[in-house]
Image (cartoon, rainbow, N blue to C red; front, side, top):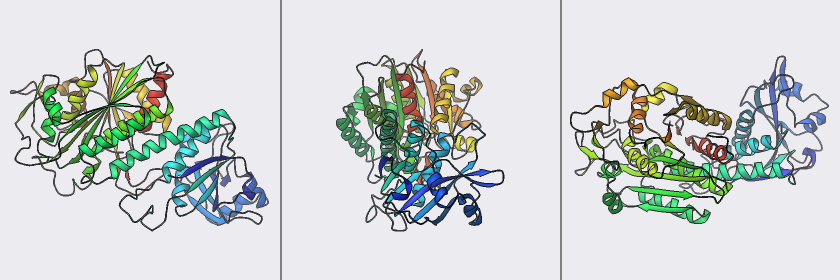
Length: 505
């Protein structure tokens, strides 16, 4: 992974492949952002004019390259657009800095070292720039000849944050937090991008066991026999058609000073063919990403442990492969869930809610203060919110609002969604307690209502449908790569931090 340091060095004397500066979009043209004073001075205060001559406007994500001025040891200045210049007395926001750092890191693929001279007013800015740079430099290279991108270049090797204070406790803490969160988020991206022939439920469970041992997290893995003995009909039913058996993984991080307990539950369908209700061609090529919820939960629990947060966090990874075969669950079958409720399976491609139902009931048995489940659950949510925003449903409006605020704070777009009671009737079944399908319109909300049925009485719960932002099929943007994104990891970590600080419920 890309190395990162705080540096008090002056830009002219720092040996690097490039100096990264920020450029805002002013009313009359580009405006050189704070942090680039030394570079602007070397251009006799005319850097904004030079950039404008080269076509720069300061628009968000815009990249302009120019030769470094005389006397600089770095040969290149890379100017990255920050978007609209802040109002007088205000500063560039954390997400603006994250995105700019991510764009710059991607643009510098192949470079060994870059000095980032972006606006850095305090420790929070240092953390945001570090986070953006480390996420932007991500590259999935496990199946290539080396750590290289499609053009044969290695990711940016080292980031030096100019203006950072290596001896300042707050600056050091901000960067250390960024390292822990981004390393685990990037590990989630790796899992999402790993082909399903190499990441089945057993392999995913093994990764979780290794990480748990490394970071002092207690882990329990239920295999097919244990699931059958325990009565986990949902997970078993989804995995019944695959040669790769399902797993339920429980990760438990505890802290001696904790007074609150959070449970995170993740959908982990390592490959989703749709089962007997087979997906049509063109809809199954990226279905290795259907375990993104479990990857997010796994990463968040490990990050919480690495940060030493004073909150107990339990992660539940509901892992299965949904395949068609002679032993697969059929439309019309009835499954008896871990809760004891029966479910008529009308569509085997609505399988995520089945594995989550078992894991939610298992999590509820421990009576946590709150449960948050994360899942690439419905195409309906993508139609509603697009490919960059996840939906948030909950049985408590205040908790739903707190999650949306936390997501916004860390730069993960989300939107509060309702749980309309009239949609519940559509899941009534003449054969079982409930069906796994209801009305077609509002399908994402129907799925949320189904999950609510399996949350223990009196427990605060929220559901994050990350079907849109979990896997980026388009080109990279900001610090978001093509492929697995690690959506919801930072929101879950922030929830854990707020809970530990006593600021969440």
